[in-house]
Length: 266
Image (cartoon, rainbow, N blue to C red; front, side):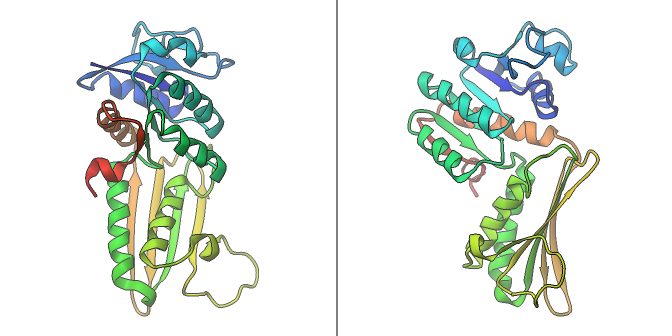
């Protein structure tokens, strides 16, 4: 039985993970974490998530609960993830990370952490989105320089990083397939009088509003036709199920960095 800890349990994704874990085979909720100042600390996590009493109290101190989990699932913010990384490194605990918005230096810290712990990272845990990564690679390789490529993403009004981690991963996949440099060729929005579009550009458009769970579209615009590949999430359940698949996958892995492409064999 895999003992799982979940961070950010008072948030949207944290609650969804707690709910999904109740129906998962081969694993049990061992610990639940929130920021020490969050009012959920000290409460039963089941009551916080709306599933009834579970007998697990929300803690603000992961280091004090290391005996209660084998794998921790983290969908929070970069600073919280890095603090948790230190705990997991010190105690050889595996991590499943769905947090996005890391800087280059923060990503380097996570990569270094993989020398001590098994770390599973994905900007999006949805199986459908990760299949989309493969489909957009195939389309980009086939169409090449005959089309203009744009990435459009939309999320709820409370998402603070833009473009989304998934959109940036899409950009990386496209840049590799098209032999382009994302740092040089990415265009993050347009305003005013612009020059004629450079075919080498990879454009990004970001929308924020309401309770949109997550939508991503890659537009390949050619002469006389266009191709669109879109993924729309209608709930967070698919992300939670993907994260729990990752828990099973990484729970017995040696230290290293793992991702959804490896899990799915893509």
